Length: 297
Image (cartoon, rainbow, N blue to C red; front, side, top):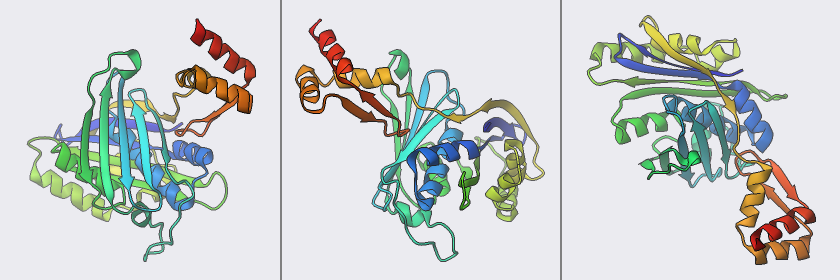
């Protein structure tokens, strides 16, 4: 089971978050059948969203949305306070050639555009309030740098973000996925920041250590080196969607009686596919008849 840890380092001067997300990336890639480069991009966004949302309170929800002109078309990921995450790319089969280093060209498949972070509270229990929306231009397309740029410019938090997805040719296709996010709190010692920058610069590739069974705690050690840290919370994280057959029925019912009658007459049923998890729900004639009866009531 994938895990996320949340804590502090350097005597409270740095907030630390780390997660191994190999199972999550495996599941989302299986569901959406994404191309290799789209898989790398989506896996990074899912991990980054979980890390950014690690301190969410009950009934909070965080959405990261990338709107871009690259072949992938856009990416959306959504996380909640319990450690559930879901997401998708607009063009799952988009692909571009490797970059000059012979690696997946995530920057190339993203292109230019905007990076949005949406924070909502109480939506699922009817206590909806106006969401907070922050946005910055995409500065890298490599995802990790865009998370760091967002935190620096929109939330005024200097941060270091490491995200990685390592793929393999055979199933389950994902060998390793995970990330680390370090946020410098007000008053952080410049010497600590320099130490962290130097440690990260000389650290081994994130995915190589995850592929060797590293834990979330190991990822923190990789990024902090000799700097002390304390874990405040550890929780299991997983891919999970909020869609259901009942929600599909409710959505079709909201289209109105005339539209449901048309589905019944022309198609003898209805089919709905969730964009977040690719699950398909099929409603037969009896289901549509029931919807019509309820609308009449």
